Image: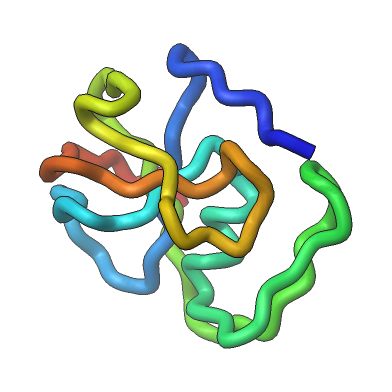
Length: 103
């Protein structure tokens, strides 16, 4: 199943580190719960279907960030070429992006 991408909707990044600018080559997603899970730095993460609960073994205190500027596909971001997840879930940044901390 493909994750429905809508460029007008928010994009997220999860991390256990505090910062204001996301570097080029970092992963972002529109699936908020996935970014929250990745923020805890799991070594194992899985889901059965898109939008289903995410299982993971992350233990770090995670921070959720919102990408704080408009994005264009293939200009600012592109699909992760080596993702193990469904199509439309993971994207890589092509340039530094401004962030706003959510949690």
